Structure formats: structure tokens, C-alpha cells
Length: 284
Image 1 (cartoon, rainbow, N blue to C red):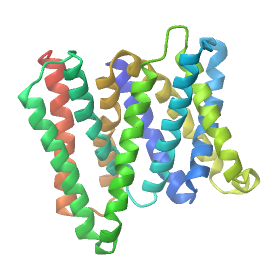
Image 2: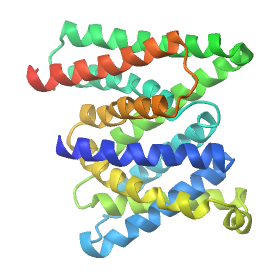
Image 3: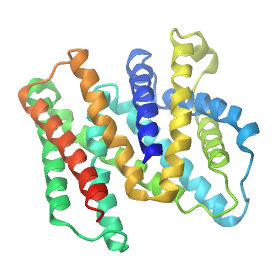
């Protein structure tokens, strides 16, 4: 649980950095993926001499590594596109759907017992997300035609995020978390090279600050990987828990928010907290 809390803190900082890279720096999905993966790779690489290298190059691990890279690229591309129009907390609100999927996955595997209260909270979570989207449509009628596109990107984002965690938990023994993450980020960065101009990126203002936001992200990735290897449900809880902190940040910045969107956000926060209490206090 300590790793979960630390990961939430690291990712909350880096999420605000992601919004800056995508929206303020006006980066394309390929540029966003390169900046995030390359800078994160550098910070993770610094930890290798202290944590050691460990990756067993067999057929299974190589296939899993390629799968992890595919899910990470999909995550970066969809988040880059979404953050151009939505706030960071909206992204995390949608990611709360992974709680529902992870819970039923663990019930199916016999790890948790079915509980009606958790199912009810899952329904509330979905209702909150729908209210957020409805509030977006009411506040900006010009976006109505693009809601379908946004929903598709949101779904692709949460699926890629969930499959990344699920695949990471299947890595065989002999692989260190930091080594796996370094290889994933290296492959992700290399895949972007044909689609970007590094010299143009280097001249862009604010690039140094964007790179430094990857430091807490690197720490978050390492902590997140430890959690994913232990329990897929806790892994899915990490990102949505950030919703409360990012929502508070949006209120401080006085972002435009109607009553429908506000109510949906509060429902999402309530459902995430309720599920956490039910899991850890009732020991289901």
C-alpha cells in the first residue's frame, strides 16, 4: 500500500507535466511519445548501476517486451491526443473504468469474492464518467460532434493501460523491473525517430522543464511495476486515485466546470474511495 501511495504522488506531478507537453508545447503524438519515453529512459538508466541489470532474453520475455512496447506506444499516443482538449483529471476519471475490469478479473480468478457493494460503487463510477462527458457537451456544444472520437480514444487509452499492467505481471523470474522499463522506453523512443525532427524539438521553449517532469514519472514507473507484479487490482487503483488530487488542482486553477461535470467528478472520487475502503477494511 505504501508503494501505491508513493506512485500516486509521483504520477500526479508527472500528469501535470504531460498536460504541459501535449497542450502548451503543442507536441504531436510521436513527439510526445519520444519526449516522455526518452527522458524517462535517461532517469531510469541512472538507477541501473544501483539497482543492477537483469533481463533474461528468452522467447517468452522478448514477446512480452514487444507487447509492453505496443501497449506503451498506444498509451502515449492516445494520452497525447486527449490532453490537447481534456484536463488531466478527466483522463484519470476515465481510467477509473480499469477498477471495474480489474475487480471482475480478480473475482474470476478467485482472488476476491463478489460483493454487491463494490458492484454498486462500480456502477456509480460509470455514472460519474458519463456525467462528466455530458457536462462537457453542455458546456461546449461545439464539441458534440467530437464526443464519439473522444470516447474511442478514452477507451483505447484505458485498454492499453490495463493490458500493459497485465502483461508486466507475466514477466518471468530473472527480470528486474528497472531493466524491463528501460528496454520498453528505449524501444518506444526508437520507434518515434522516423516521425520526428530532434533538432526542431531541441529548439522548442520549455523542453528542459518537460524533461525534468519525467523524473517523478520514472520513479512512478518503477513503483507501479512493483505493484503490477504483486496485484493487478492495486495496479489499476493507482491512476484513478490521482483523480482526487488532480480534481483539486483543477479547482485551484479555476478551470471551467459546470454542475454536471462537477457532480460526475465527485461521484468518481467517491466510488474510488469507497472501493478502496471495502477492499482493505472488510478484507474481501
